[in-house]
Image (tube, rainbow, N blue to C red; front, top):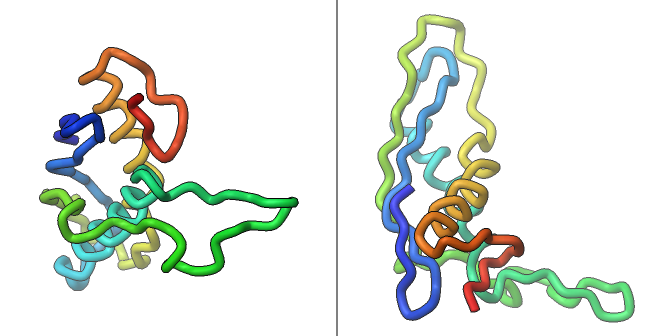
Length: 123
């Protein structure tokens, strides 16, 4: 993770990921899968990504009411695939779960304060 704080908001600049998915039949597809999943994870960290409730009902009904990462939010990626001759098994979404905690750790190292909520609020 390479991150900074720009105008009081966290900014992600670079993500380096490693993945072992057995034999990567199409490495470019594996790379795209990791990138897409990481961008989904990044969306959960951005201002406006809150899922809110009113009278016990979720207020957001679709992506038009929920902030998702825009092209200007997307970092550079280095995806490293572990070479393997094991039978292919598919990819899934392994890029999604580690993104928010790793980004939170990077922001915490920059600010000296723990990140305790999502989306990230540095004020």
